[in-house]
Amino acid sequence: LKSPPPFPRGRQQPLSGECCAMATEAEAPRAPAEASECSNGQPAGDNPRPADGTSGKGGLTLAAKSDVEADLPPLHVVLPVMVSVIQGYTLIGPLQHSFKVAMHVGDTGALGHAFTQAAALVQWGKFAMTMGQNLVLAPCSPLVRVYIAMAGMFLGALIPPFCVFALESHWFGWVFLSFGLIGLSLGVFECTFLNVITPLGPLTKSWAIMGFPAAFFIINVFGFLLVSFGVPVQALFWYVVVCMPFGAALFAFRVVPKLREAASTGRAVRADSEAGGKAAAIWESCLDWRGGVAALLP
Image 1 (tube, rainbow, N blue to C red):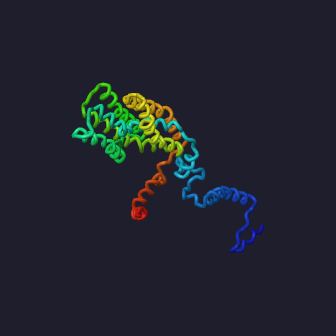
Image 2 (image 1 turned 90 degrees about the vertical axis):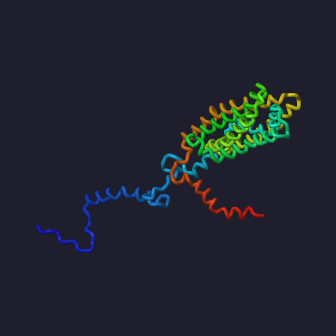
Image 3 (image 1 turned 45 degrees about the vertical axis):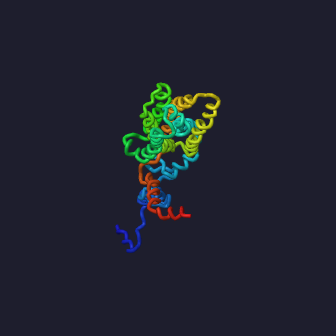
C-alpha cells in the first residue's frame, strides 16, 4: 500500500465529512455571543444596561423611572392630607391675634413683644428642621418622619383651644410651646412629605402642593367669613385640631399602600452609580455659582 502524498505547505488540508460536522457544531454557539457583543453598540464584557430600562439589579434607571412616574394618574387624596397639616401653620395668621387676646396680651408692651418673638419661632423652627432633620432624625426613615411631623403639628395646634380657651390657662409658656412645635413640625413635614410621595408621580405631587393655598383659604377666608356671621373663633381652632387625625388616617390607609405598591412594582432607583446623578448635578451647580450670580444681576 502506498501512503498518500503529503499536502503542500501553505494550504489548509481539507477536513473529512465527520470532522467538518464537528467543526460546524463548535462554531455555532459563537454566533449569539457575537450578536450580543454588537447589541447596543457595546461589547458584552462592558456590562451594558438592559434595554427594558432596568439597572440590571432589579430596579429602574433614573431615566426610565422618570418616564414611568410621568404617566401615573394623580392620587387626589394627598390634597386633604396636606391641607390637614398646613392648617396648623395658619395659626400665625389672623388666628394669632385671637390667641393673643385669649392670653390677655396687648399689642404693645413687654408681653406683646415677647408674644411676637414666640410667634417667630414658627419660622425659626421651620428653618432649623428643614436644614437639620437629617441630623436630628437620622435614625428615622422619611415615612416615620412624616408621622412625627403630624404628631408635633397636632400637639402644637391643640395647645390654644384646649389649654387656653378650654382650661383658661394664661401661662405664657403655652405660646412658646405651641409656635415652637408648629415650626419644628412644619420644617420636617414640608419637604419630607413631598419627597415621600415622589414615586406616585408629578401629578400627585402637584395636588399636594395645592394644599398650601387651599389651607390658608379655608381658614383665613372661609373660616373668618363664618366668624363674621357669629361662629366663635374657638371653633376654627378646634376644626384645625380635629382635621389632623383624619389627615393622618388618610395618609396611613390610602397613601402608604400606594407607596408600597410602587416599591413592589420596582418603581425605585437602585443604589448604584446612577442613583447619585441628581446629587452630582446639584454639586456641579454649586461649583458653578458664578454663572448663577451673573444671571441674577440686573
